[in-house]
Length: 257
Image (cartoon, rainbow, N blue to C red):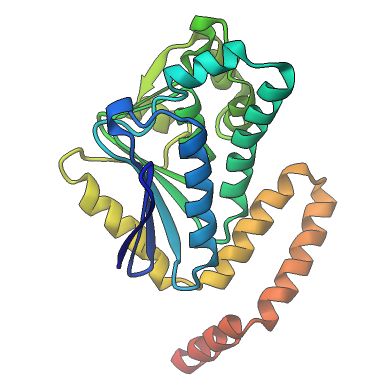
């Protein structure tokens, strides 16, 4: 049933898919305080809805997200250190929240995903891009630093590729982004919505609790040694074994054998 929780971000649940749409098409879905706050609210809403198996994040209009809007940039240039710190932390909280949401979050990129908008796309667990999509970090062209998104980019591609993207400020097409490991699938422009739906609905055929545990374990390993990651895997393995979904799944498997 379609619902809206904020004019800047649209929220609707279609079967098991929470569809979250950045809704500032006239501004190329540029980031500002209101949109970031509404996006956090939508993600938390999906996280608490047990009927949701996956979140699809997209942009209204021609572009996914063009980064910070002009008013936000003007605010940055006038702000105090404390104000800029608070503003930067708000965006950091959004990137962290995407990883904390129990279900996979897919960014569906059509048009341009630039600067913080590119960071937002790559912060998602999976990235599906239209053939005509463009990705890039042009911040250095105006003397800015793509600081937080650097942490995301380093985890998505090689050190050399990441450095090139961050320091040259050029944008790349969807095929290049896929070759760099930034994009999971490149979809035909005309069939984008249909192919996106087919991909997202695959999460209806797997155990949502198991996917949630896998997601938590996957990202927890970022800061762990190999041994600690294995220990964490042991704990997660035991939790999964005790879950009702696992018991029922084993019963079904044994009946088929």
